[in-house]
Length: 270
Image (tube, rainbow, N blue to C red; front, side, top):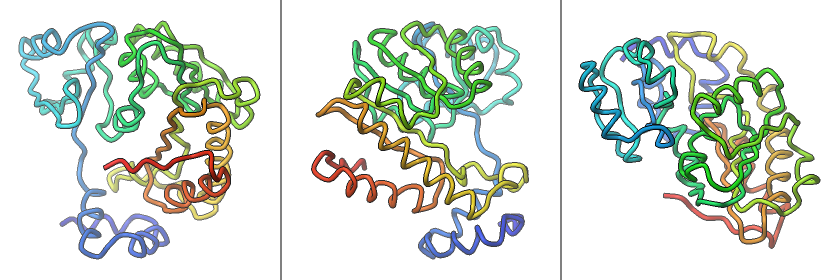
């Protein structure tokens, strides 16, 4: 195994060792040194699996189906072959990691529902939700950054999404505008992004710090509590991050269950 994982922040490695079982630590560390496969989701608002795979066959793009969804694929060819396609420019597919697709699959959006994506930009999950709803119902896609909001709007347009309104707000007071309004809410929370670290790209971890984690935890709590107040009784809330820190994951869930005691039921997703 490459030893480049030693380039990761020392304090991060110490924390990782304290939370990951010893028999799994080697696998996690190795993953940080490996290149990640290109994966994508077929945009069913614009095409079908058969049509897109036929195009890939014509262009000699190698692919294999993933196991998490019938419309997701692992690309074996050079990613640049995808980026050169008109199909990419026109939004017939969305380049998205498989792990990024999982929260929306857990959310299980249904046609004609009202759904909130409270931290939406750049839009990978919002567009996935819209496709599963076949552009029916109503999605509110919120983000706290106007610049990221522009990127979100551009992605929605490219992907052919028509059932979504974009709001730029911090998110924690959104419930005042939409009290107990949504059938389902996705809180894909801003996080320390430890799942995206790559030793080949120091920029992926250069801003990591314990101080930053503590600041993120406060924002995660605000967003999740706003989500609870924005969602109908009997509705569904999915909380997700791309980090390993218990403070940003399990501890957040423990906190909200205690804070909203009696209002929430925890559903264990296997």
